[in-house]
Length: 260
Image 1: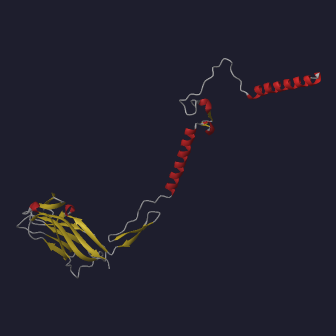
Image 2 (image 1 turned 45 degrees about the vertical axis):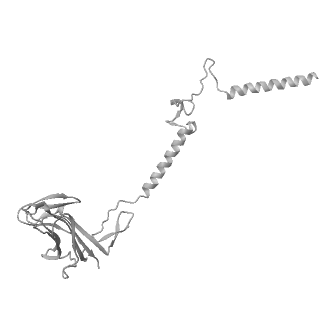
């Protein structure tokens, strides 16, 4: 090989070596000759524990977090958005009401309601919540197989009285009495009264049986069958007896009606 060509090759090799050395000095981080290399720990998702030095401005950079953490954050963020959307579109609490004889037809976004009158219906009252017609009459709540009622404990034979709410303009079509009558000597009865002392409808009991029974009628006073709440109130009367005591126990009364 010619001396000139050999000299050129040696110079080129020397240049590459210098360039490699310069690159190592420029891009490789300086290491402490006495430091012992630390292998990544398998006990942490990212291979090493996250310490304060890895946190920037109080928040760990997402690209430096382990995939398990970033995935959990993304899922949590999606749930927050979903919850916000559900809250924004939720139905407001219902604040409107419908009068007896009607039902809710439409509920507005603000909770208001549109009512629709029902063609037929039933209004019921319980004897357990009724009071004696005469204040000095003693009564108490009683329980029989299948029902709870109220019976008389002292005083002259009396009635339990309880107001009943019926739709204005409705026409009474039936009266149903649920009762317990196990007394051979005393019979009972239930009546729908108008506040002008008119009997709109009524039924009586017959015989004695130790069981809950039902008496009903569709015979209604023709002059008083239409409910007029502007002029009258309506009350249910249920007969009691101190002689019969718990053997004669009113339970409930239901009034059927239709709307014109």
